[in-house]
Length: 466
Image (cartoon, rainbow, N blue to C red; front, side, top):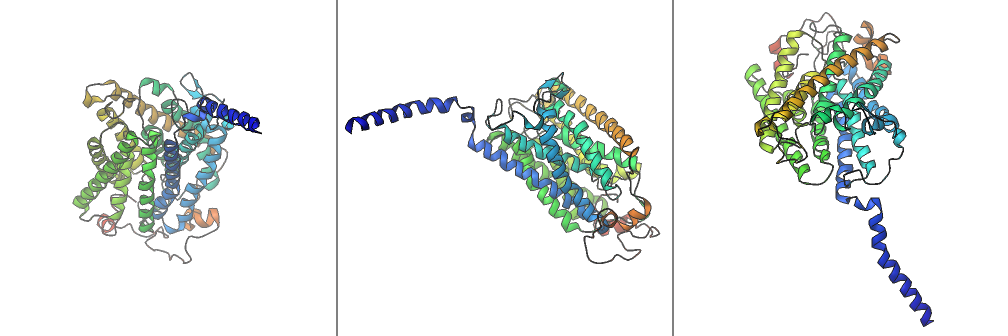
């Protein structure tokens, strides 16, 4: 008996001695639990941004289109998540093919498992989940440009094709080792890939669709500003995962991106409100909400490359230039970017991309580069070139997709459908159980005279040209 126990103890001792060696050989052993937890939490934060965007946009449309607007964001969460798992991740982060697109070796997440991400501390599946939420919210941003006038079946086809043929290639060019990454372009969390691409595509699509019925002749006022503020708050909250999560770890870089995001958002909010207060005589909650989003957009490409003080400057300037784009440029050219997707995301993303080329420093992120204000010029050159590429690609790609889709199906709702509202005509439901009388301030009658700019300011529409 004693001999048997001795043999057992010897066997257990051998097992204990060999265990560390076996564990070290396991690829999963390089995974850092803290980093993994932060990335998964960040993915959840970015997820809530898209439903939040639905509320942000939904409150700004007339009440006859609130469900349609929210539905678009909500449905995109489902549709693009499926697309991302099936083909999106492979196209974006698959093996690079001549700097243009990822190979299809990861279609359906083939070969993607729980092993550590190359040169990282998190499992690749956590990275897949995080990037999925980026792929989801990007096309959702476009919906603000064509709100209240696009048929749902055409919307679904356009968004799906846009994600496959415009978002995935651009994301690969910048984040997946494509030619813009090889050029040296920096985009920490999506100024080029997300905001410029969606904002410019939105502008292009709204021009192709044409203005809403009665635009410029009847008031098209936000029907529920508290809903919009709730959406803005959810976006601000989720943006910490958006930017700080892009550090892909619970580390100092994440902390820098977090405080840079907060500083930029706060500065842009103050800038927008102060400017509209000086111009219109009254500060508005819609202005504050718009300014906060403008600042977050502006700092997105730079959050992991600039120090906190430059982030505040970037945010303040972002709030000012986005206000100008919304209140002045849009009115001058007369395009019907319904909820200012281009004015905030397109313009804010453009400024943020250029600002990265000015204030980026390797003191914050050694994996980045020094910008113009730190003695080097190449990064600014790369940012400008990449911005131009994003504009051209978004415009040309959107035009091609629109022409193809419009040749096989009806894209825009007709006059009667717009007047009745897309909630009823497209989805057969209403957001509220009360009727809107003709000539109401929500614009049911096309004969209602347009309100004066001073009246719009008085009721709190901020700089938005509605």
